Length: 501
Image: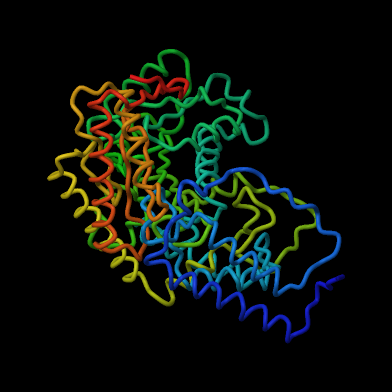
């Protein structure tokens, strides 16, 4: 069947209602939906369908893919997902994505997207005001939506480079004349390594500073490293502090780090992709005390603000640097007569721009800032409840005291080597996730294996935590018994091979 792209109105409506019914059924199932299929049904191979030459019936294809995506998918929106920073999206966010896909606005220039650009700028202003920067928008601060935290962190480092070494924009990093150096904690995100490489300063330019017992970047070790690099002829230019690390949700001491940056004239970028969203809560704003001291800031609405993928934001209180770093002239760019705001393409790594702001703007219009304040408070309390359970558990103990709704913990298994402990944690994760109903993960914190759970879905309730606790207790019993009988496998963290004990 040769299917035209321009469906008639009746077909469009039937397909649209069909899809909405499927999405509605999926959302109705999320409070109790399994995260994935059971272990024995999982597969990771490729599909082998031939390229279709002719089309099929649209309704049949839509029903088929909806059914398969739900039945075979990995469902991070489930209330039982306790994994990484992937939320249940707000329904207004889902509707916004459909509207954006249908209207397909292009945000590269104001001349082509007056209202869409205004909505994005307004959303950026709302967030910047919550950060607490002085001065009016956009002369006091500005920013832009990105594809996610990776692009936002890349943009933050590009701003730091453009601010401290302006000649690099035209003449490249060779014009610096020495090795530029930036700093972040050993627990900071891998996107910083990637960004340093892509910026041409090299991944070795990133010095990862040891963390203290609370898994925060150690300010004394940071200052010592800066002094050493200056003495060795390097050119320190930027420190990245983290507000909500991926492993443990730790928030670095932003005030202490800011004071070090001032003393050494370094740009302070805060990777707040996850934790910076707490600025929406008056009650818990103090958890990111000092965030307003940042020169630039990353926030990912597709994390704690429950937006559908993808949405990141880069903000800075030096808007002139934003345009200096990214502005490029081209004759085909439409110009809006009398426009006083910069085109998005002049403050962003992107040219063709999707409207990633509408989903957050609409959610705020419908639920308000206080909707997020309530969400943040509930999730912090749920994580605190789970942390309290860990502290009374006979099988587990906390790895670090949680700050945000991420709890890291480990087996109480005296006599196990680090490799055996890591293998035990792998086994716990396997047992807890075997039937597919829930998901947690294993990671490394301060170089040691830990188990990790976080409350990220707005649908998660105490009953979901109770079910997870029961599963963890059962898994721990099985693992500890196997450890005592010497059947546990040691995980070699260097080559990931195991050996029987």
